Image (cartoon, rainbow, N blue to C red):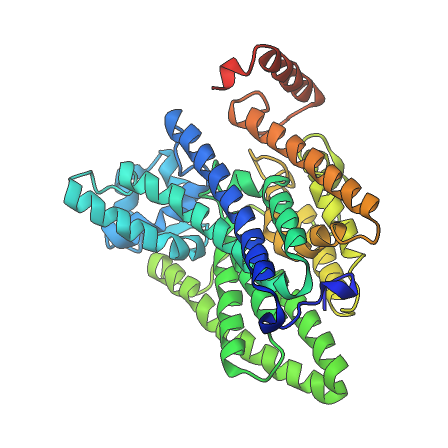
Length: 453
């Protein structure tokens, strides 16, 4: 389906030798264990240096949790009585009629809520302050993105396991997580929305790639995931385009016009379920403002007639391909997709619209961030592009592709580390900052990595 070589098709499990099955299981687990180890190391560094686990935009998403679950006040009045004019009040503004409106959506808080409730139980029993920000809650804020990042990787591995060799999947997962800014948004800025979108995008692909027969349950599950994606980040509506292209092309190949009618019906069910899920956001707006529909991003807008494409993709300040060239490699790898006529058109349509919308936002640099953070949301679609590079026809080409992936991963980790320690600034980065980081790295290497211990 997605595999680039005939030999990558997965044989029936019962015919595989036990050793091969064990090897595939090991290759499935290795990238997850590597990601978990890197997350653990990163979180240890952040805790050791007292870096808050709810930062910037993350405060906006997190604010629903203490407001709803501790203060029992969806109007945010009690929350603002305590936190007005503090970083915790990020995104909350008072409207013209005196009510409070949180501009950030409720979806991230929905996904964080199990961790928050566990932290609240610990705070009650261990007599920590129940303010939503004391140590148990900080641990919860660190655990949530870590768990969802690992779940997202696991779902991608499962979705593409029938179509690629196990080793190819392992390399692709490592490159995708560590060679892009996904690792950063699973740790340092884990309270932002992006790793949650990554998890849901992975779940969506897992559902779509396995959806071959008529199934109301799969339609309902897909609608649920799409609805959660809208709750997390409204621009995730672009994943509807991917789902529509994929299902439409897949069903048309299988059944012609009848297949298209089936796809339309399936998408209608998905849309109805997604709309029902998104009604949670409408209810949240109504509870806080008395209005069912609001434009929460007052004074912020898209510039669709003058998108910042060059700056978004290539600038030193926040260029996607400058800071994380692994994205470019993944996009190019998508063109190697064979035996699945539907995937490349669906991915290309999605990525074209996604890039255009992302570059059209007036604040195209997206504030103080590492690289182009919005593209973390699109990573699930790019996964087979990286897997394709490790199943190239010749051994030399495969080794070259893996070597390139390793180099780009080291570059991404280099940028991540020096962002964390403050050498690379959150915004207005220049080539001078990178040169300074390289000089510091050389000094550390010559000194035996002493300052990094």
